[in-house]
Image 1 (cartoon, rainbow, N blue to C red):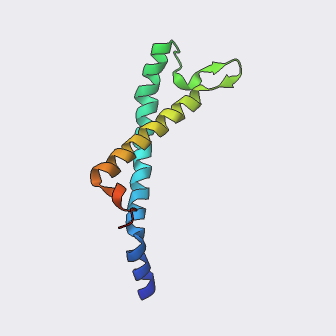
Image 2 (cartoon, rainbow, N blue to C red):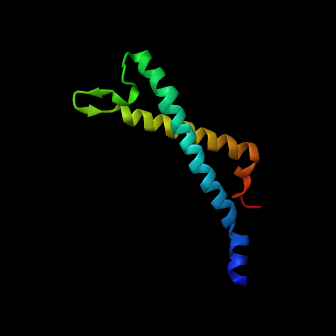
Image 3 (cartoon, rainbow, N blue to C red):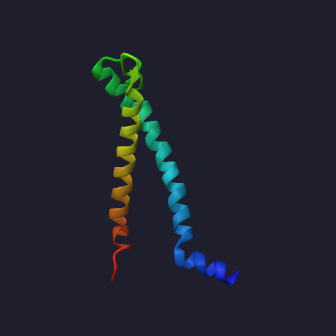
Length: 95
């Protein structure tokens, strides 16, 4: 048991777990934002009443890919800014 607790302390498993949980919550919020606000706005701009996800060229549905890409870009930007503001980008650098 002592070795297990030492492993958790040394490897930062608790911090990793908290980051994983917060990442999941951030992903849900950003996905909701994109699907509820960004996607309809872009859909109205390009003239698609169904929204961005329903865009297609013949039988190729590329709209959902665009929605997922926007999700990814926003989540990546949020995670980057959080890590840079907290100074966590310096954790892996050798001393």
